[in-house]
Amino acid sequence: MNTADPTPTILLIATFDTKAEEALYLQRKMESLGCRVLSMDTGILLESGTATDIDRHQVAKAAGSSIRGMVASEDKGKCIDAMRKGACALSRKLYDAGDFQGVISIHTPLTKDTERMFDRAFFPE
Image (cartoon, rainbow, N blue to C red):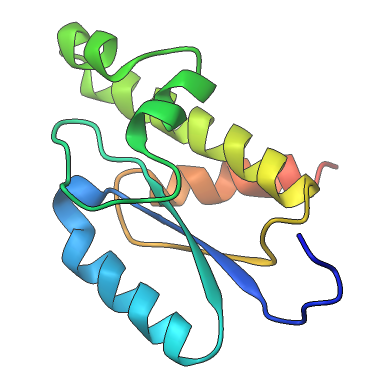
């Protein structure tokens, strides 16, 4: 990240397979307020058809998994847990690199537990 550029970057995490419309609304709104947006797709079941900066396959890979393997497992809890772990791992890496300054996540099954994982990842006791 260019430290001389004061434009804030916000990481937008959403399940773009089901929340693309809402995510794109937030993205446009944040951009209209002068922010850059870095988008992360944590959707599991379907390709969203929306281009994101970090796609669902990258999130799954960061968790040591794959979308194909998760879907084949037919274990929703396992899928959500893997995407949560991948999202947190990638977010931490991006934050440490200075790639974003804030996070917004659209309410999904990932949100509450992801917030707890973010707390542990970013503010260890």
